[in-house]
Image (cartoon, rainbow, N blue to C red; front, side, top):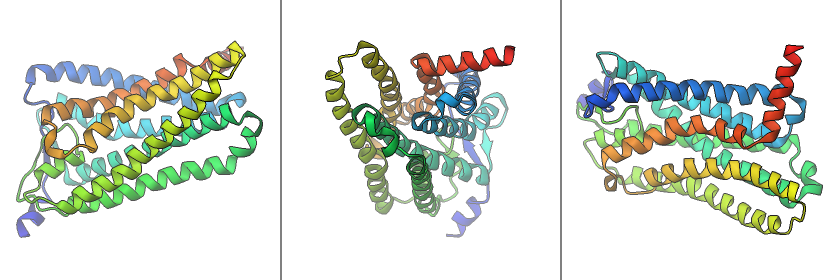
Amino acid sequence: MDTNNRSSMTDFILLGFSDWPQLEHIISGIVFIFYIVTLVGNTTIILVSNLDSQLHTPMYFFLTNLSFLDLCYATSIIPQMLVNLWGPTKSITYGGCVLQFFFALDLGATECLLLAVMAYDRYAAVCQPLYYTIIMHPQLCQKMVLTAWLGGLGSAFILCSLTLKLPRCGHREVDNFFCEMPALLKMACVYSKVIEIVVFALGVIFLLTPLSIIFISYAIITQAVMRIKSTARWHKVLNTCGSHLTVVTLFYGTVVYMYMKPQNSTSQDEGKFLTLFYTIVTPTLNPLIYTLRNKDVKRAIKRILYVEKW
């Protein structure tokens, strides 16, 4: 117990991609570009959604929250990662590791719930168009988003407290590029069945349940789309729903694979690249997917630029 207490006060070593030193500069350059695109893309969506009155709808309210979430998620991981890739040391303080771990869990769980909320919003818009403004009134939207954020916060507190109590027996090396739960669990010198059960239970709540809601929503939406006779409205529905489905596939595909499988069934190298995808690539692609496939956002950007120009 004393060993664990002493080790909790020391820095951790983030091994990252040190097994492939020839790739570190390439990875750092790619990550830096992705981070810039993430900052610009998500900030643009937040500004445009707030500045253009025509985008003051539930869909863009949720999209603004998703963009803010992606900004926080990327910023909690990438700056420290770049420092370690560029600098001579690969250390992170104990407090910094705890914060990274907590925010990764919090924001990841929140995004799972938020994507389910956005699927329900698309269901209401497509299948209940006459009652859409009544169903998705501002108070309900705010409560749904607040529930998503509080749910993520609660899950992060539970998993953080359980994981950080595990004895590490002096182990300091985190075999990943940031302090993520699978890597921290592998540092522990004891096996915890309790954590495995809790992770599985929370995985059902924050991964499988929202994913089921998304599938059900889109199954109903698909039936409704097949009955649409207007070509213009049919294309609009496909554009808005297609963007959300693409984001869901990118995010859930990798996260479910990482967290719902037994921890020992995924190799560490495979886990690093999967983690790299959903922590860095997905937050970058989200704003691009929504802006490139969404004519409303494109028009809003043009209107704002036109007003500023004149």
